[in-house]
Image (spheres, rainbow, N blue to C red):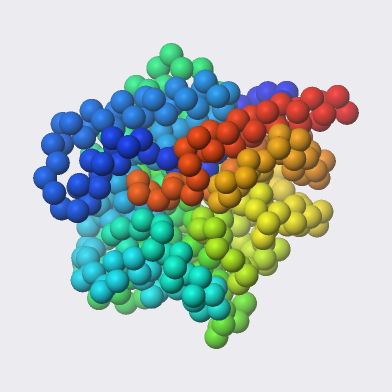
Length: 392
């Protein structure tokens, strides 16, 4: 899936900070206000064109639409693209996170999260109930997203383009299910529905990135009182569902993003990557985009001293973090790239980001100017790493 190049290519995880005009229109829609659909469509189209051009001008190689077509968040956008789901009543605290995704980290640092959540701008985070068969209904929405990106890429220099979609494990982990008899049945239906979206993205000529933050973060929900074995059984079932959703799709046209959630909190209860590396590598994709640039997980580059990257696969480490306003020095970025390249092969590493800079229209982790400075450091660091790696 990596275009042939004697250099370190650059990309990012997907979600970029939305422009104010688009945010305002989406906020009105989220609040239930009447929105001029034609005006929203025009704003979305122009916003995608601008973000595509900005990525190319900066020198990023594999670019996308910023996930601008996702009107709720990186995962919950599918609530508008699937049948059989019903929204539950909103909690008394509009900033509260659903109980089903609140784990040990939130219990251990309750005072921090009580203050933190109110600064994050989360919306539509109420719980949902499965009330009927889950089917894909998002054909028009994904067609619009594809068309906007295709139009925006016309005449814009780039090595390749990608679009993101959610993994089965990250669809409604906090759901109440009144229809399916088991997790297996629900996940199977979700996988069949998502297969349609995955297929549409690849058939349009784009690389498919599957986002799966909950695969890693749900460890914090299960353990304790559950064990690591309980968690691994939970995760293995979801890896199986994802591979079912990916059936028939060429692996070289896909990549899989795993992180420990994008929030800039303690993360003391995160599962170590060494505990899940084998599960992640069972996902039938061409590349693995992993969070490796933040202070809780950066040390895990050493996992690759003992874990072998499968033949023909690509590693996309996060070499800049989305969760701090400190802009990484390009030399540090280059160091992060080269130490991994020496373990897995220089042709098998592509420089990326830890996670998205915005988890939806209303949540951003840094100021837009800092986002672009970080991505610039990514590009420059990859250039420095190329100069070092291709002279060895």
